[in-house]
Length: 177
Image 1 (cartoon, one colour):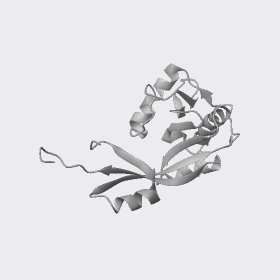
Image 2 (tube, helix red, strand yellow):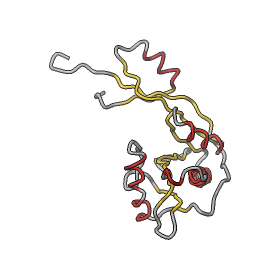
Image 3 (spheres, one colour):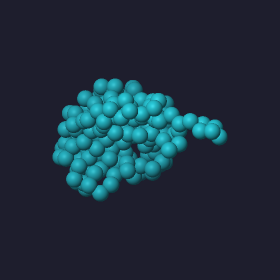
Image 4 (cartoon, helix red, strand yellow):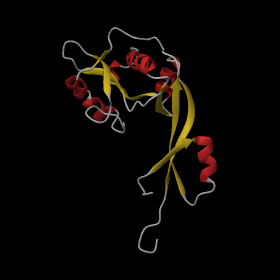
């Protein structure tokens, strides 16, 4: 494993593992959240974005969520969003990203700060989760454990969570290891 490789697993397991490894570096805490039912929150203002609309969401990530693994133009399957009229600028988006047989995966959720507090994130996430529920047995996502507003939104959509931790192992460098 190289120094850029991160292990990811349930926090309880990783806490025990860290006690047995030389020089582990706890990296981040996440909630793995999932559900096995559709939240039923489809909103008329949410739609699947075409490729141009999705790319227009890129500045939201650049400014307000640069650390997101899912970004328009990258590896996500498709994007849903609420766009401002009449200019068509995305106000809130979420991706159907990296879904696999048996589990749909929601990622890349971001709302412009000026549009927060209007329920747009909940509407976009509910729209994507409903679609994932139609196609897969369950839906999942990962949220930063300290992002209370996001976790509240996901719980209101029927998601339950388990605490996960990311960890890096420090590796010796140099010819003698």
